[in-house]
Length: 372
Ligand SMILES: CNc1nc2cc3c(=O)[nH]c(N)nc3c(CC[C@H]3O[C@@H](OC)[C@H](OC)[C@@H]3OC)c2[nH]1
Ligand SMILES: [Zn+2]
Image (tube, rainbow, N blue to C red; front, side, top):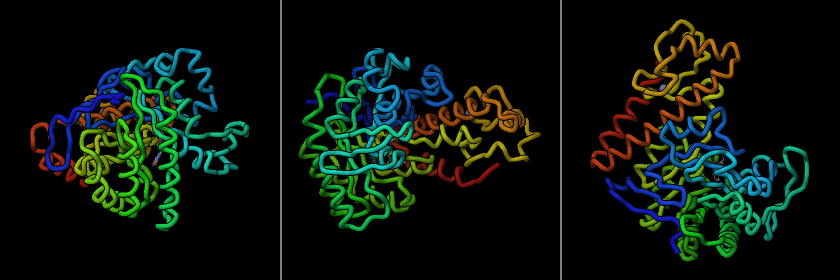
């Protein structure tokens, strides 16, 4: 059944070093996946994204079904051709964005009906339609249509929401067209409740998927609660398939989640905050718009080899943001994605070398140094 391959190459405690194999190439894990919601990683060409070390990027059913439509993307050769990215692509199923972006939506057993946040047109998304859209997009890793349980939620609300997602997971699996090098991931729900999470893991494992995402987190619960949910959920998950923690996170989130057995991540932080002038560096974060950077000729991060850090000082980057020059968001996005890939590369090497805790602890200690 395996649409995509997964090899577990090494472990160090619960941390895992692996390799995902798809029709469009391999992904070394732990991996960070840049978000390319509307068929573009904002402010970056795909060559630039590849130069950071990223091996897979994300697209989104919700955005692309509204504009330019999945039919148009398919007509223009599929998402790889359309956006000139010949490596793996993972697409989200759209449920999360429907709940967070659209208005006038109604949920039913069948699916979700909503109005486009772009032009108010009405749309209907069911597990079957979401899987079909992701197939038309030629996505290597398709996500089941689920309901991301809101936070906070009572245990009864989490149980009811999770069970709907499990019924939709079954329908998603039945609608998925198996192809070598293409896979379908289930999404574990259950809120912050151990019994609900356990029931969800068991239900998805019973259906059988190429990989398992942990959903319903990074929705405002905070890092401590997120790690606690990982601590009682991850041990229940099969070891021979990738685990993907959706929507996570800041560097300290990535380190703590890799420590707890997560293989794949996605987050808008490096790109979205890069566009607002926030740089992630080894010692924490820098808001380049702050006046104290105006005269500083040092690079963002002396240990970074990205185009921004190789060629420009903070004073120049500060000027670009003050002048609202588009090169500013481009360079900070590039730096942040490059740095995120450095963090993942460092953790992959540490797990392979068997000194993950020493390396991760040192990274966490530096992150707490605070702004410089
Ligand atoms: C920020 N915190 C966060 N928690 C999340 C939890 C879930 C979840 O339970 N189910 C689903 N289906 N998606 C989730 C998502 C969205 C990830 C997508 O959101 C998009 O980023 C904006 C991106 O789309 C290119 C990505 O694609 C996988 C979450 N995001
Ligand atoms: Zn840099």
